[in-house]
Structure formats: C-alpha cells, structure tokens
Image (cartoon, rainbow, N blue to C red; front, side, top):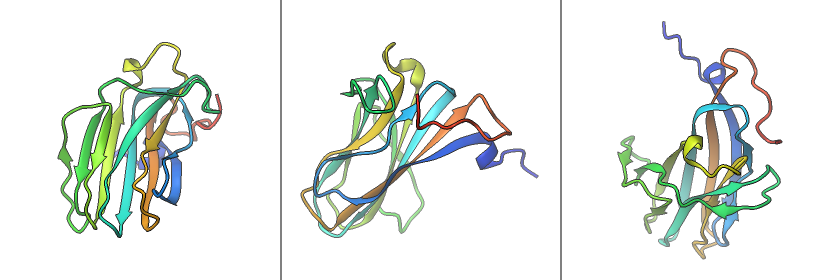
Length: 159
C-alpha cells in the first residue's frame, strides 16, 4: 500500500472554475506562506474553435492580487496536446506556455518553485491570455507541497 495520499500530502485549491477564454482571465491568488516545496497548476482547456492562448504566472504581494506582475522566472511546463491520450510532454522552461490552436481538449501543467520568485512575492496566480473565442474554456487547480502533511493545512486563499 502506498504511503502517498493526495489530500494529506498536497494542499488542493481551485484556481479557476470553467470560464471562457474569450477575454484574458486570472485565477485566484494563493499565499506562499505555508508552501514548503513546489506548486503545480493544472490547467484544462476545452477548445471548440482553433485559436491560441497562453498560460502565465503572476507574482503578487498579497492574495488580493496587489502588486501583480508577470513572472520572468523559468517555469517547468508539461503539455498534453490531446486529452484523448494521457501523455504529458515536458516543454522548454519559460515564463509562459503557449496552448496550441487546435480544436481539442488540452492539458497544461506548470511547476512553480517559490524559492525562485522575487523576495517581495507573497502570493501567485495563474493567468490566461484571450483566445478571442467565446466557445473555448479553461479551468485550473493548484496543488501545493505544504509544511502540514497529514493534517488539514491552513487556507491558502489569504495572506
């Protein structure tokens, strides 16, 4: 039996409920104060019309989104260009990740290392550029390694 239990090993937070990518959008900010290791953002795209968008990360000074600036740090990214399969392909580390202009369901996963972020960064949030298509959707979840394994960790939605 595995000793890894997802809800006891990682803090799981909804970043963004399904929303159209017709306009640029941002996910909820999450606090870094209880993060001990990495943060992963898992983005699911449903694209009815071929049009490109991209995923990025904002560094913020609080969970209200204050002081939000796009990170310039290199983020590790993996993509699955068609979720009819289950193969994730690691991409070149970059501050943002482009999502292919296809009519497929796609997955993008970013790994954020809080130790690489600016010294005034107290929170992060995921961002999405506009696809200019009202029938294209995205949703996202955060998974965080915290210092509170095995017990319910404190909220990540406040500073």
